[in-house]
View (cartoon, rainbow, N blue to C red):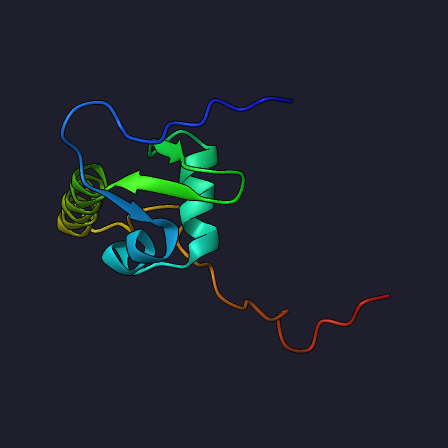
Length: 97
């Protein structure tokens, strides 16, 4: 199982490690790995245990997410998922048989 390992990214890009990318987005390192595994962000393998992200791509993703959240708030909905339904108790006096 040989992976393609790039020592330097193509072009003139600034790479940041997973921890720094997570700080830029304000999320966890596991969330960064999820973003990479689902193809939302591109990664470069610098070694067997080293993954790097393009800093400009991470910043662009953060900006796109902020725009999507603002649009959702403007429309009166959440950015993702269903609205919470809350707890709905049974009607009073009705017994289960």
